[in-house]
Image 1: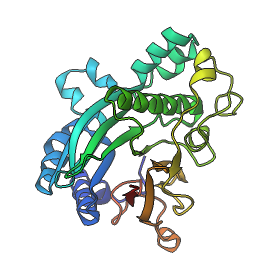
Image 2: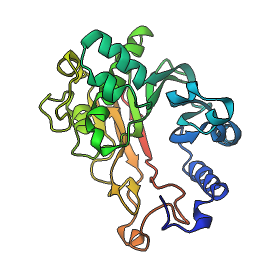
Image 3: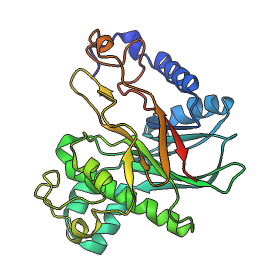
Length: 300
């Protein structure tokens, strides 16, 4: 996939050290990582970030359940870290889109919930974090949606399921209407149905991303939410994913704009700099995705 990158740049020993350095330099209170291999979380990122004052949790994609111990270590997932001096973990939850697709099919019919959504083993992880010294809580989601551009409808449904699950979790914990932040790789461009659903609170079933699919009553009833969401980045990033074959914005930080204000953010990589590279990784960027970083302020 990355034949245009020098071998030493792709070497994992080099890349993981650069990723850790990047996290340490930015020093965010919350760090959300996607595509972290199980073994790398347990053997590298978790112990290294604990030394930097973080605690964390991790869930792998659902296919891990059917594998032997050795193969299981290579399955990737989502890892969330939080600075223990700032936050206390109240709850953590795995959100399995394949499991939710089975339940949605039983409730709403629609064969494509089983044919298209259920086989994709993407996940999200959700947590409720309490700010130390206060009673203020924050709902945080770390997500990774399906990658294939021919399955735009699946990404829309996964996003709808994520929003629905976040609402259910907060209701069950009796923490209604709390500030919410959703980070992740949505594998969806700014003009996609996923972004429209998040930003507008609903998506019409005639949207071209849904195509000619059969989601039964689910499409009519569930492609909406009551959050007031905004994206931290509104055109400030030229790219979040930068490879030889694809360059575009597919990663986002969403927040509830009735609870949170954006104070500052890390801008885009210089276009002049990028003219020197066919794609990432390179000697300065250890991933083919650029980091998103923002400073958020909770309204009182």
